[in-house]
Image (cartoon, rainbow, N blue to C red; front, side):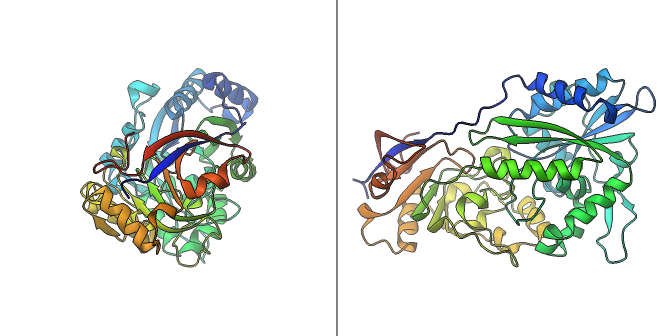
Length: 415
């Protein structure tokens, strides 16, 4: 393998990003002025935040805080992330701090607790819960990115509807919904969200859609009455903007890093073509024989949920795993296969060897190999010679001609 080289390729997308985030948020609040009139001066408004890997999150949340404050409210930040952060109040505060969400950064205090109150629910379940801090506030503004989910596909996936239920209901609600398996997400999420909205506690939601370059492309503020429809519309827009690998059939995908700041399941299952959730059909593409992952991001705080989607990992990655935090997240979801530890290679070189073997590759020089930084950063990647010919001349793909060795010491190649 020492003489194998990869070629740098770049993917091009035309969807522009929003440059003036603050002005865009202000415009949305002006457009929805009727939904954000408060019953009394000094109303305590919970700004629910919790998803990872959102571009401009600090700017978006800070702008929302300023708009609420300008209307006489006293906003505070509420972690809305189900069981993440080890399912502890301090852990969730630390997760938000890792995203840059602190009182100093956004101008509102972070109030973190795992306490919940139970809400009225139908006889056939699921039981419904809301964070006590949200319930005791004067209203809740959800702030979340809307995008295809990594566990299931339906009319509402990751976004405002899901945050209204699982995010806002803390670990208690996450356990309840996930106890129904994938049907709890696919079929029970929307009725549960409608029931939560009927309490009148949620004022609305600020939905975010990103373009393939991880830039903020859409900001939309919805009132409580329009939240479900806005979430559905933004999901359709997000599906149209979602990036994908430029090749559907690979022997080996090499992933430099996985992590909770990249995807809720470490690697976006829509990108790698693996869901591994009982009851949910697997994607028909891409078709990847072996996936090797080399590192876990520091922002994951040791949570390696999704590591089971890989076939081989390095010792470097394994040594970073916080098994308690990972187990807490995996068990809450109920999707146990995603928490299984793959074969562990002592070096990056050995990981590549195992991945090639697992793909039944007899001639490494002819292998169909793609290397990416992570499943969020897809604008640039590296391809083996077996793929370059297919990619050359394809619309939206630039083959740069820059070359680098597949292996360099213990690493794949220089960054």
